[in-house]
Image 1 (cartoon, rainbow, N blue to C red):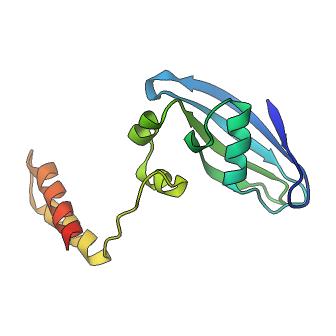
Image 2 (image 1 turned 90 degrees about the vertical axis):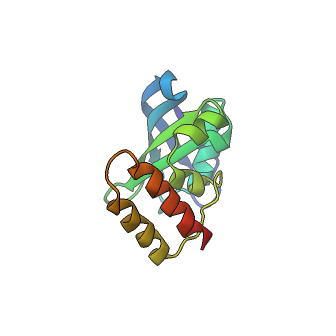
Image 3 (image 1 turned 120 degrees about the horizontal axis):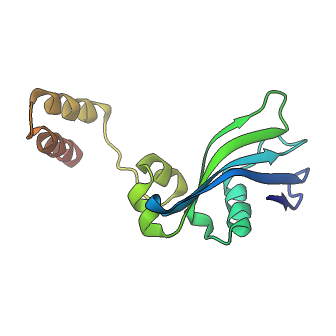
Length: 144
C-alpha cells in the first residue's frame, strides 16, 4: 500500500507500509512504514499520522509512529507504526513516554533528586513488599 501526500513544503512524499500484522491481543494493527521524501530533510510525524489514518480508516490520534531512521544520503526514512482499535487499548498498552509525545498523557514533573530518593528507598526493601514500598516512595516523592 502506498499513499501520496500533496506537496506542502517542496516535494511530494510517498508513504508505503510493509510487514502489516493484526495483533488482536493488544487490539492494534502494526506495520513498518517507508517514507520516500526526495528534496525534503524529513517529514513531521503529525503529517504522517493523518496520512496513515486515512490509509487505514482510523482516527489520527490512535496512530503511534516511532523509531524513524533516515537512510544515509537522505530521501528515505523507515519507522514503525501502531494503529490502536480504541483509545482504552492505546492508554492500556502504549508506553507512557509515547503517550506524552502524542499528547494523550500529562507528564508529571519531578526533580532529579526526588526520583533518585524514591529509587533508593525501593532498593532497601526485599521480598513481596518491595513493589508496594516502591510505589509509596514514588508517591511521596511526587507529593514534595
